[in-house]
Amino acid sequence: MDLFTGQNLLEFTERFKTDKNCKEYLAHLKWEQEFVCLKCKHSKSQIRKDFSRTCNSCSHTETASANTLFHKVKFGLRKAFFICFEMSTTTKSLSASYMGVRFGVTDKTARLFMHKVREAMKSSENHPMDGIVHIDEFVIGGKEVGKVGRSYNSKKKKIVTSIELTDKGKVKRMYALKIDNYSAKELEIIFDKHIDKNAVITTDKWKGYRPLSKDYNITQIESNKGKNFMALHTMIHQVKSWIRTTFSSVSDFNINRYLDEFCYRINRSQSKKNIFNNLIVRMVKADKIYQAKIICS
Ligand SMILES: [Zn+2]
Image (tube, rainbow, N blue to C red; front, top):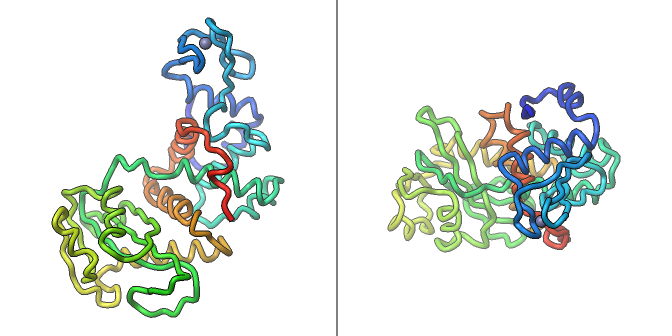
């Protein structure tokens, strides 16, 4: 089976005409290496018409979507595939109400499924940044006052972000996550998850970074109102306006999901050809996630 590549909507529509086409695709990704029965661990199975597998030993049947992020998707796999295609290939902001209108589902249903997709977009944390890295913090929400510096307004969400730059100063990768405050302990979270000990890091002169230079190669320079961190501040501007224009309100609980979505696309802007398939593989490999873990507010 050929994997789907590219961003062409007509080709996509032609390839995935029915739920069955999607089941075949999922089954291929799920079992192309091997089949192992979930009940008895037996490895031989019969392939059914809908691409489910029935274990030859205990007769347990597993569907292609079972135990993936497509598990019991209410509105059919084809719509789910289209939403995945939109979310992976777009450069625009897509809200749940837009998706609802486009695919004929309620806002709530669209929102829930889009959060599952964001779950799949989360970084594996297996490829920490090890080159030229710039780090800074910013806030989301509340009134924008346009002033430079750290905000202590408790209504705003505090975010720390890191970008990795090419030798020419272009953005290669980006990560961002919510922190409770600007202390070294909170700032350290992004270092632990996404920064390699060999990275050559630059931050502004904020004292919260000082204790971290024990373990990391950090140079602190004047921010000069962001002028010394141009690429980073361009990205901060983009992610803020993306969140502001798409989502009327973003809860503390979900903010990291939106940041994950934004960074997932940024980090694959050079491999857009394979981005849809990459996302579907992640949806298949991730454990199914229960609604209770996703819905909040
Ligand atoms: Zn079995």
